[in-house]
Image (cartoon, rainbow over all chains, first blue to last red; front, top):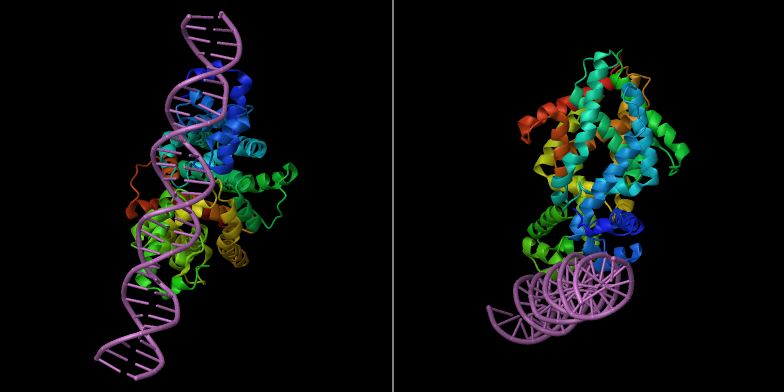
Amino acid sequence: MPKETFFKIDEDKRERLLREAAGLFAERGFNQTDMAQLASRAGIAKGSIYNYFESKEDLYLYVCRDGMQRSREAIYGRMDPEWDIYRQIEHIFRQGARFVQSHPEYLILYANISSAGMERFSEQMSLEVEKYTADHLKRLIRRDMQRGLVRDDVNVNFAAFMVNSLYIILMASLVSSHFKIRLQEYLEMGDDFTEAALEPLIQGTTNMINNLLRPV
Amino acid sequence: MPKETFFKIDEDKRERLLREAAGLFAERGFNQTDMAQLASRAGIAKGSIYNYFESKEDLYLYVCRDGMQRSREAIYGRMDPEWDIYRQIEHIFRQGARFVQSHPEYLILYANISSAGMERFSEQMSLEVEKYTADHLKRLIRRDMQRGLVRDDVNVNFAAFMVNSLYIILMASLVSSHFKIRLQEYLEMGDDFTEAALEPLIQGTTNMINNLLRPV
DNA sequence: ATACGGTGACTGTCCGGTCAGTCATGCACC
DNA sequence: GGTGCATGACTGACCGGACAGTCACCGTAT
């Protein structure tokens, strides 16, 4: 979606623009992000951005897609497809949590496509974002159901839906101020979200999933 | 938080303003809502709104709180505290889904306090919104654990967190265009969200919760 | 010299909040 | 019951700041 010019410029500059754009869009939201401020943070002129992208909207979409790919790479990259579902889920939750803590901006971008006035973006992006995970989870559940690792009376679709819902909420809880407060209220914890404090969260959540899916 | 004047005016007018404000804030989000347009929809002058509220922000907070109370009333209103946890959860999910379908605006307002740039609102509202449900769910789980209706090896806090997470996601799936698309992808359903199509959703989700919590 | 990326002042639009003035109501006094 | 006055809700033109996108010009490399 960028113009060709964007791929001809210095790689540093390109990365800088993408990084600052992700940061600002995540911090302020789409509408409240000021293109002049973005330009100045990225160390380029406002006009230059319009040499690379047709519009603010185009830039936003590109930044979102780029973030989705980076996230996917970080989370699914080092996962062995032969691991059983419980190990894969734990891996996804742990890698996801780590990635989200070091790059909260991409998760915030994801969360924002579901907020008011963003419908035009979700029409363009939601399926693209969700399809990959949905397919993967369902395949995994079916496979391990056949292997006798998952109880056969659960509904595959609902189970996948539930696992991914927990994932989304947990990740949002590391990042959004509302969901952080909510998490603290439910789990009666402080506001320590360092890597060490993460582990019990992951264990607690994946344990629930185990309880639900393991044959009795 | 409104000025005294707001409570002295005609009740019709007050209701009209609150209704249109909830609608517009939900449709456009806080920043994109135009006070002049709101005034015209509510059939009053822009200046009048500033006779009732200090600022756009004040109005927004009041509309959110008002929506929260209406939702709570609709959902918890006709519930017998003696019902067991499974019946209560089913009741909450069903009443919640119905209310959200007839008044999507309030859920959208809730969802929006977790989006980018809304931190100042979540500091003021999140605890207030979540505490009630969190306390209720935990109490319920503990009570029915003692009664032998809930397996005693689940972690109360995580279980409450999980139930409420599913509730939030399911409600969001009835309302946000992103979560609608996601729900359709997971459950391989069409875009029919009439009252009849709701029941299997509620059954599916509450079944998962039953599987998880019932003693084996 | 030509092509192309870079630039930032400029433009038109939008919008939150203000305020000086209007008007309906109700009350006191005749 | 009529006159005059006080109160306070109502109004919308206006102001000032913000901001997306444009464009005419610049510098540089070939």
